[in-house]
Image 1: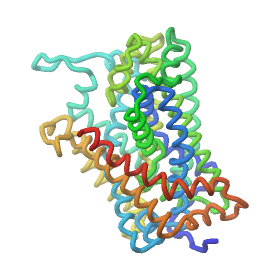
Image 2: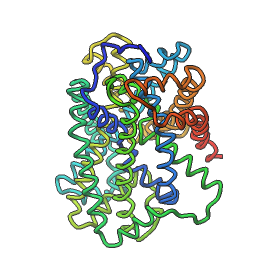
Image 3: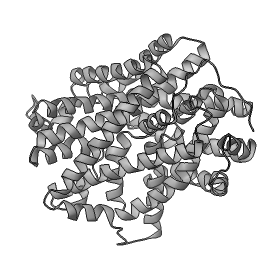
Image 4: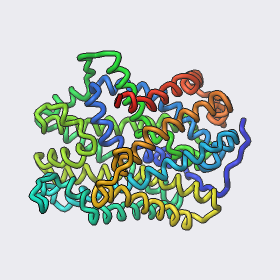
Length: 465
């Protein structure tokens, strides 16, 4: 049994429930609310759901368990945790710290967009969000395009959203993250259940639900299966906060007396449940609004900020439902961005021996600088691109499609072939009689997970070719 001690500079969660809700909050974010539903619709509805659930309870479970175990056993932030496992892999800590540092700024920009829409619907101005505007040149564009191309409004809401995160982080782990998670996560769950029930009462909604839930094997090919597995595996990174340094950081705050295996199962159940319910809201709603056109679902960010406002505008009590939905999205986004910021703050505190306040100030400065690149990338600096991408799209690509799969792959190699799986197994068994999924875990972390990482890493490039 391991004898490594906690870094006493770290705080800790006050209860197992607090840890579960905080970790679930980090997992439940924008990826669950809009990315999961449109991927499910794009890749065959129930067929995608089946593959995703299988991967969540095997692939996702194994990676999540590994990262939390590393964090709890070492008691360190990401900068020190990997080095504590094996000094030769200390560089992974810098990669793990860089990922949330790059994601947080653009995530706060998108969070600002959500706050803007929440404000419009909450004040009875949902029609504005669903409408179009005419530029000085006479060109007609959606409200969303007009909003993000005007740097003033986007900057204001970016700053408001960032300050909300800072307010929680400054309060610390128990008084800030744990307390806010215990409030926000139940509210989020009640909201999503209520809106899903309401959506099912709309005329034609059951047809959309059938499209979402029932597997489609039309034109089934090996290529389609490969793309679906790749998409579902990639979605797990968004949905479960894998390879972002978050789970290692939160694991370092986890109490030893709490069952690690049971906590991970509860987190993935909560996370997958929210993603599933989000699909029951979005897919039937858009399906009805578009007259059954599947292409209406495959619009990326436009689905949330252009198509859905139009859907709410056509609904009875549209402003009320729209306000509830964007409050839901704002809560989901906030719980995720808080975890991103905490991961970076914890790393800065540990590396430079700074107080929480000073570390927060340093992180705020970095976030402001990088965040403004994403804001200006859609407005004043729209003609400036990196490898053909806007700043926000580039940061998203380099973190989610390159850095995260590489970090997860290296984590598998570290645990499976260097430290050996017993490193994690001993932590799971700390105070427990058995590790129920031990056999599956060994197979996944040694063989299946590394292969999935390679698939995720090469898919964007294969698709382009």
